[in-house]
Image (tube, rainbow, N blue to C red; front, side, top):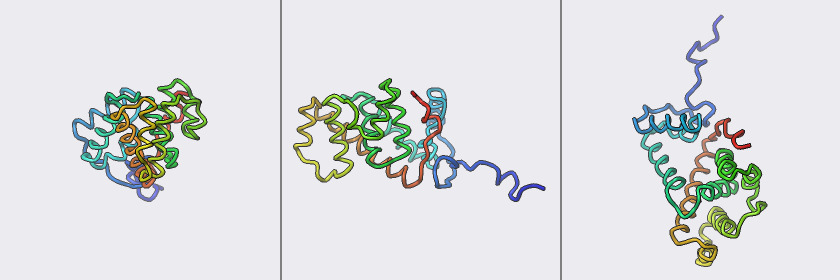
Length: 200
């Protein structure tokens, strides 16, 4: 006897295992179809955060463009430093998705699995140079109490060797991940299983 609901009930919902909201996937634009293919070619899967945004192509395109600009475009911050900010902010916000995904990125970029764990648990436990301590101290304060930031906080970054443009980038990355963390937690976004084993 067939189970009630038949084949349609047995079919996997588009967002099952991605997030708690059951939203239909939109028809991908050529640019986003190519972007998803690039993800498959480069890392072997499409990050669930992109799938979560794929119910609305305009939102997906805006998210992807801003993310790629912040995390990959030329900057006085290294790619590792930007990922470290992502993990430090996500640790403050207890964001499971971003801690998992960006913790994996820290492990990959640093070649140090222990650093990825330290960043996720408590970045202060890591043996970091003064430059990165200053950077993460600022990002943490911005996450906890952005209204309390004063000129002395920016001055501390300048003393650590950051330019004013670098300070903008630190703030922009921290601000982006505060938004992303809140969205991921609100919709119970789940990281791709592949992240857990990366760079171990």
